[in-house]
Length: 361
Image 1: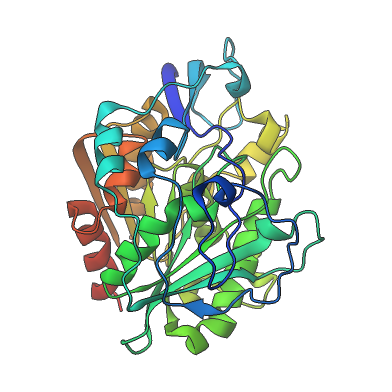
Image 2: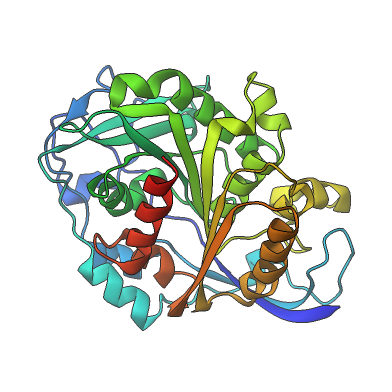
């Protein structure tokens, strides 16, 4: 059945910010790409407050930027649809008033007890693309080994950066978890399955190293927003990615998907190629199985139509497979506002994530 769908996805984000340990760069220089990807202080922890450009200016410059994907789309994976314009041809709307309201409420400081490990390499990369295979670790230095949430950002598989999600990382730590936010390979230079390979490598790195940074390697959770939710769900449901690293999805305690994409339709050929079989292989919906990790599936009542169309079927299939699943639709939230809402330190969604993680830890 063909239906009208409108997926709000991200446009290219501001240039990668340059962060140097113990140095607070001026706002003008903060958006300058690093000149040397291999500075010797990568991975060190710091108590200092993290200085970055104002959240209001980031909101207007696509802080979690948006791009409309509109047209007639066949949501059934692997079947060709007609009259679907390419995602790259659409204009980028401004964030909604609700999203901008949340942006204005986000705090730009890092409390003194929160330490951040900057730009840690988790997978061998060339000098050109090294930053796309680095991660940041957030943790509360006063706590013991906390559950770990690995968050994969959205961006239509071709944009976004881990440093756009500092408020989310801090909020999760304030909720008694450790948090890892990686960057990862992006289309069109690195199409599917490269982001999934990076995700599996990131999980492996966390499993091997997080105990030295205040996290519990036996309590790993995945989370993601939009295209990042597709990455988190697929690496948890298709065992091949973790099996390459001699791991099994049973190492994961749970998966949190926020406004996720669960079936890849026509229109994202820049990220998944033109072969419908690849679209099926990239669709988490295809790999739902008994014994999968628990899922928390959330979205907004005003979310992108593709999300609203796909989520009920995804939830139904999870329940049919007897997977432990919770779900929530937040009234009034859209595709961008919901991730800003999740980043607020005392929001209902932040509390829901904390409960899901702590109950299963």
